[in-house]
Length: 437
Image (cartoon, rainbow, N blue to C red):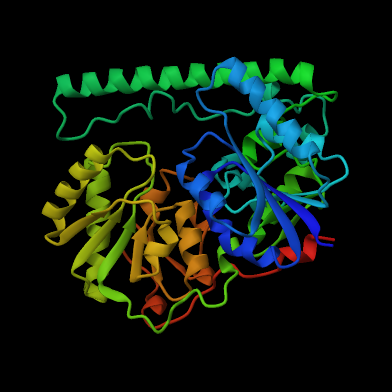
């Protein structure tokens, strides 16, 4: 009789990356899926319905829900988890209150937190300082103290609320800038209020539903992975393993393969790659895509790459959270500056599946880059360092040449090794089944 695995996931876009892993695990285990999300769920519903490797599933939304709906979600979670005993649970994170509640119900199940995203820990200057100095004592002391609660974190945060509302571009008139600023300001305030009320509702509900206190701590907030209190935490990067073990003072984090690296033949080497195109996945930035500095750096980077790669078209991939009108404006402005054809890619096909058609990829710091690299070990990837510093203080800690990802510096130079190298690292390391014991 097969043992049972419950997969609990929040990010619906990242969940599709588990397809190969689910297929692999289903040979030896029965797989159930519980989606607890604040994202769009349409694609996930179709995927789960049509996947013969998934025995049972439920999808519960936690965004913009009325209190009675949130209460029903918690009762549905309890019913789902109690319907069958599970040997193992693989969860995408355990930092959300509803994730913690779900895991608390699985008292006789080995729980594995499987983080496939890029590191939020590396976006914190104090974490980076501790990592580079090899000393996490301050974090470990706080982790083990009574002050290790979400509401009592004393670390200074960068004041970016007003900076991130809307940055005026060279094409904005004063009137247009004021209107856009106020509109974005109101939207951001409403989102903050909604998030606060949702968390308040959940804490109130959990007080009555759970026999044990469900809390968020410092590690939850810094990592977005979890508290450090579960059995096992798995990462695809050794640096994430080292930092998570450092700030918790435990050896609870380990290295494992990226889910997209599980495949019989992912590279499709026999298929001709489109070498006349540069694939450009857009990320989310703390300013408009038509900001003059952003456009200037992106344009110069592309033109520098063209000197070596000789492509003729730019394929810009829309981010799921990007506004289409802003992307259209960016496309027009970029086309004027580089004098090359710029096309938009908008669709539901996962980015890693689209990217493998191309020989070259250019972008900035983004979780999608890890997915692209894991899915295809032949595509040449270039990232702009200056723009990436607007996302994280030291972006090179996320990716480096050993991972087949090459940085374009402030002088628009990059390691020429990438031009001759044909195969790259694809995040394949220790099989996740090694931890299912």
